[in-house]
Image 1: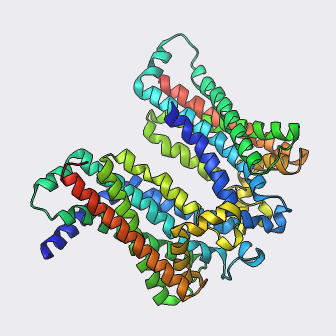
Image 2 (image 1 turned 30 degrees about the horizontal axis):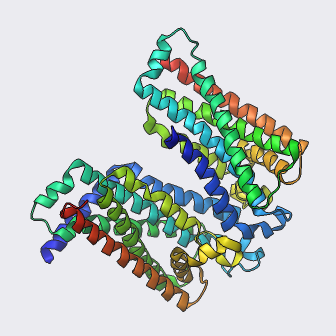
Image 3 (image 1 turned 30 degrees about the vertical axis):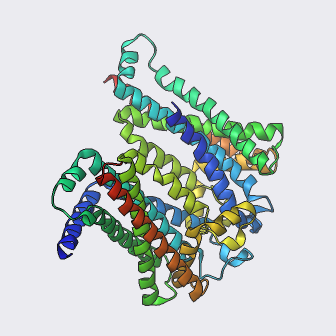
Length: 233
Length: 260
C-alpha cells in the first residue's frame, strides 16, 4: 500500500534534510562538541522512521478491522497474538529499510557510516522503537476499531520524539524541556543511537537505552494485548 | 456591493461556525505550532547568545513567534481549502451557484473566515509567548503591524487553499497542499536565521519569499532587522495575497464555466 508506506519513508528524509539545513548553526554550541548537525540529526530521523513504521502497523490493522479481515482472522483457528506479532515484525523490517535510506542520505551529505557496531546500534534502536510504536498504534486500532484514530497514534509518537533530545542534547536544553527529557524513555534511545553515530559504541548510553526499549515494549505490548482481549469480548 | 458584503459576512460566519464545531479542523493549527514553539525555544535557548551571526534578540522565544504564527496560518489555510472542497463535494457550493448569491461571496466568505482564524491564532500565540516572558519590542504599534502581516498571510494561504479546492473539487487533494506549505516553511528562515545557514539550503531560503515575510514580521516582534526588512516583508506578503486571490477568482471563473 504505497499511500501508507511512502509517507513513512519521505517524512523522516524530509525531517533530516530540513532540520539539518535549517538548524545547522546550532551545531556551533559547545554541547554539540563539534559534530556536524547532519550527523547529529541522523539518529532522530532513523528513530522517527521507526515510529512511522509502527504507526503504519496500527493504520493497516485499523483498515483491516474496518474491512472485516480481522473478524475473519479472529474466527479462524490461528492464534490471536499473531495479529499483533506479525505487524510488529513487519514494522521492524520497514524501519530497517528507512534507516538504510537515511544512512544513504547521510552519505550523500558527507556523513560516513559509524563503523559496523555503531551502524548496527542505530538500526537496532530504530527497530526497537518501531516495535514499541507498533504496539501503541495497534493497541489504539484494536480499542477504537477505526482508521480515524490515526491522529491519536501519530501525535503520541511525535510528542514522545520531540519532547526528548530530538533537536539538542540535554546539556543545551532549557530547564523545563530538560526535566521532560530526563524522564522520557525516547531520550535514552536517541542518546544511545547518537553516541553510536557520533562517537562510537558507548556502554554508558547503551545500558539505559536497553532498559528504555524493554520498558516501552513491555508497557505498550501490554496495551496492545489489552486491545486484543477486548477484540474477543 | 453592500449585499455582496453581507453575503460574504454570512458565508464567513458559516465557515467559522463549521470550523469551530469540528475540532480536527482547528486543533492541529493550534497544537502543532504551539508544540514546536515550546520545543524549539527549549532546545535552542542558548542559540541567540552563543551562535555567531544570530540576530540580537532578547530570547529565542521572541525570535520564534513569527515562525509560529506563519505555521498556524499555513495549516489553517490547508484546512480551510479542504473544508471548501467538502462544500463542493457535498453539493453546497452548487446550491450557492444556482442561487442569486454574489460570485465574490462564494469564495470571499471562506477566505474572510481564514483571515479571522489567522488573526485569532496570532493573538493567541503572542499572548502565550508573552505569558512565558516574550515581549513585543515595538509595543502596541508593533503588535498591530504583526496582525496586518497576518491578515495578508491568511488571505494568501486561504486563497491558495480555496484555489486548490476549486481546481480539484476534492478535500483530499486540497489537503495535499500541506506538504507544499510544510516545505515552504522549513526551507526558509521561519525557525532559524538565514545568517547561520550555508550551501544549497541557504540558497533555497534566500529565494524563498516566506523568508522575507517572516523576517518582516520579526522586526516589530523581536527587534531584528530594520524598517526596510519590515517594508520588504509586507510588500511580499501583499503580493502573495494578491496572486493567490487572482488565482482564486480565475479558478472560480473556470469552475462556473464548467472548465473544471
